[in-house]
Image (cartoon, rainbow, N blue to C red; front, top):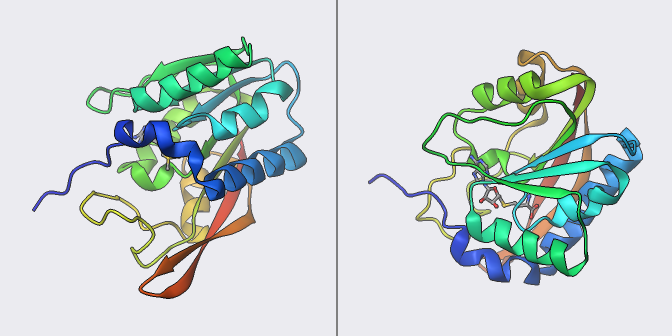
Length: 209
Ligand SMILES: C[S@@+](CC[C@H](N)C(=O)[O-])C[C@H]1O[C@@H](n2cnc3c(N)ncnc32)[C@H](O)[C@@H]1O
């Protein structure tokens, strides 16, 4: 049986209600600020931004943000939050997963949180990231460490990667031409599975273009 892609549109309105998602996004944004020291002239891209939990944690320290996602529902949530907070430097970009990926050029800071495990061809995506980035830009990718396949509640959907070990994630960076690659732990997501508590560590990998 061919499993289907996860339906993020139907989950968008409730996405921010789970405190662990907000905690993780804040931890990712804080660690990026600590390690990268984003500058006020930077053009940032958040790939797989969802409702913008990470985007909104970084938009105030850069000039401009492109928030890209394949779910219109997720992007609408972000747009509503940005309008309510009168934030004018975020532009949304809807990704069509059935078309060749095109991203805007001139990116100084490219971030992504909890999205890479949903992307089938990461060698291709990292090459595109490298192509759209300015020299000396930063790529910052947060995702699950390799897990046993139990992380996602809905087992009927297709998840291309069960997380990544650190070497594997760093190799995607290096193969695409990123340098000074390093990985730091962000936090461990806790979930209950079959009556026991399971921990799913999340790492943040950095590289420079
Ligand atoms: C687990 S959510 C994470 C959202 C957000 N980064 C956060 O931390 O809350 C993954 C997001 O990636 C988006 N997504 C999945 N596959 C994608 C792809 N190939 N390209 C762009 N976005 C994708 C989904 O629509 C969803 O919003």
